[in-house]
Image 1 (cartoon, rainbow, N blue to C red):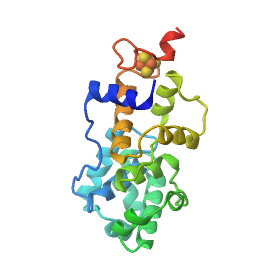
Image 2 (cartoon, rainbow, N blue to C red):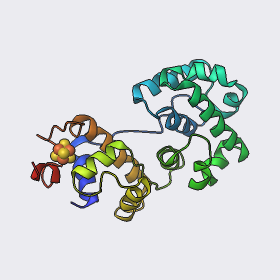
Image 3 (cartoon, helix red, strand yellow):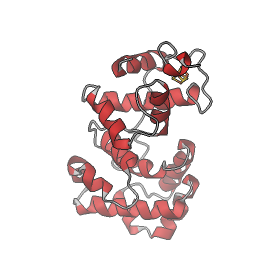
Length: 216
Ligand code: SF4
């Protein structure tokens, strides 16, 4: 099955997912995306929402304020997202990198993937989330859901490198950041509704042509 047909089938079934940027009081709203991309590591999004809310209550919603906040206090604010001590350190490292560009706007405009990957605690998935959802650039985000679904469909190998899966998506889709952003959100939706660890294939929009079904 072609990737674009899979995208269309998911969009037809689930509709637009209305993901980032959310614009819930962070300045600029893309900064919320950057913070959320770090906080979502190893936790459910519902916990990230609580941590973002806590940052808002503490008025820590821009990079300059965050950099004036000490690491321990920042850790308390992001406590609901888990691994809060490490995440506070990672957020400060990200903030320092942003300040190195002079402003968040210049960071969003100019930062490269290589520069993001040099920041402590920023791996490929977090870097690509920032590039896609905050910077609006066409980098495909590969997560565990993507790996699970597309290996079941028979399009990637489960143990393939992150970079190779990303190249596969980027080579087989139009270079369109809006499409990539929506596609990733739809993949997450499918993984939660049907393609769970134990898949519930009945009624899945990709049921026709899924290799997992034909091998049963
Ligand atoms: S048919 Fe089943 S295995 Fe295939 S994508 Fe859908 S839920 Fe996953």
